[in-house]
View 1 (cartoon, rainbow, N blue to C red):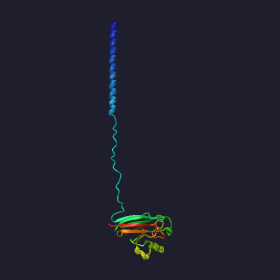
View 2 (view 1 turned 90 degrees about the horizontal axis):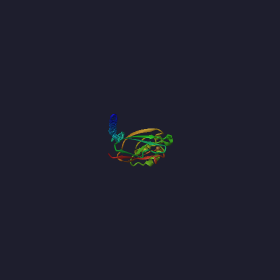
View 3 (view 1 turned 180 degrees about the vertical axis):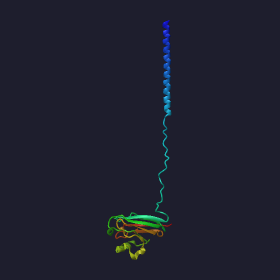
View 4 (view 1 turned 90 degrees about the vertical axis):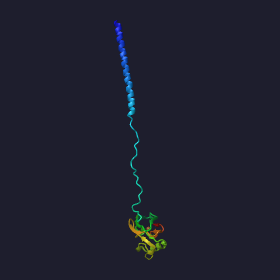
Length: 195
Ligand SMILES: [Cu+2]
């Protein structure tokens, strides 16, 4: 009788242990499922950052110095007997504000420069040849000034001069430096367009 009771007791303990073990196992499985499901929910959004910054590009502007009424130029001459502009374009009647700079370093006696604009059909080679004898006149020819529209004085190293004049009637004009020996190299076209 005692043996039977002991057996039942042991059986019930084992059964109880098995039940408990199953419960523990069930909790473990449920826990693992919850963790794996929770992992998916916690994923961070990786949406690309949208580029809503305004463009830093600014539209091309008409140079401030150019209006229908006025145009500005800066032109240089150097020790290699070169103008840095070989062509300028303006509109007839426009006010032209031109700054001429001698950017060379050689003395004015050997490498002076001017900017001289001639009338349409000027005889520039004759003018420049005569100018050689007119150092005291800034290498301009007093009795041929009908050939010249406008000019600067002779500039030494580092000097500059600004002249203002009204663009003549439309056509093709020429400018040179009249310092002796320079006009063949220091020359350019001054194109005047109609309005
Ligand atoms: Cu010159």
